[in-house]
Image 1 (cartoon, rainbow, N blue to C red):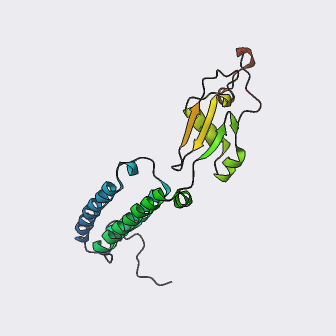
Image 2: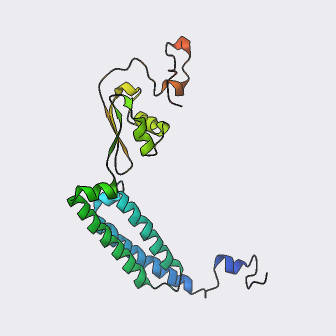
Image 3: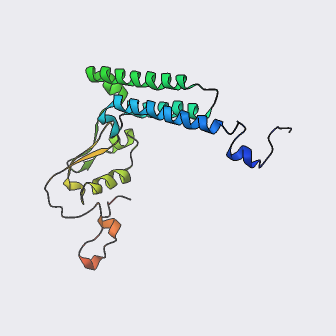
Amino acid sequence: MDTDITPFNWVRLFIGLAPPLYLLEIALRVILLFAALLIVVRILGKRGQQNLSPMQQMLLVALGSAAGDVMLYPQVPIAYAVAVLMGVTLLTVVLEKVANRFRAVRNYIESEPRILVRDGQVDHQALRLERTTQRELYANLREQGAVALCQVELAILEVTGAISVVLNERKPEKRDLIDYLLEVKPQDGHRPSKSAPA
């Protein structure tokens, strides 16, 4: 098959077919787009700098696409990218305000927090609905200091994807969340629970 591309043309591979001066234009595009993204971050506020809501995750994808294209492709003017950045940001802010005002809209856009564990009992249907595995859940419980399921009063999957854990002060008789990991020997006095997670 005939082609105008010469394989292993190192100049084309590393610098491209555009004039070398275009690298300076790319630098200018990066600086201008970076400034526009800083404005977007200021508009989103401090909450956007922590765990992202589903709307903000969609915004992040859109911003990455718009910013990446204009930084690389000479056919895409900066004004187009800025218009996309500001338009998507404005739409996100408006939708979040509407979602805060109307619960039905908020539940549709952001979903709702879901209880995964209540009083030491895992809700396996909730795990399936949220496409979360028991292994991921147990890892989060251990991160919050739980050594047994009976210590977990509530484990809630938040809309940000984080799992909030409320522990009670009950002293567990067995450490079913960690014993199987440690492979405790029977003579040590602790036997791993057969019902422990995989």
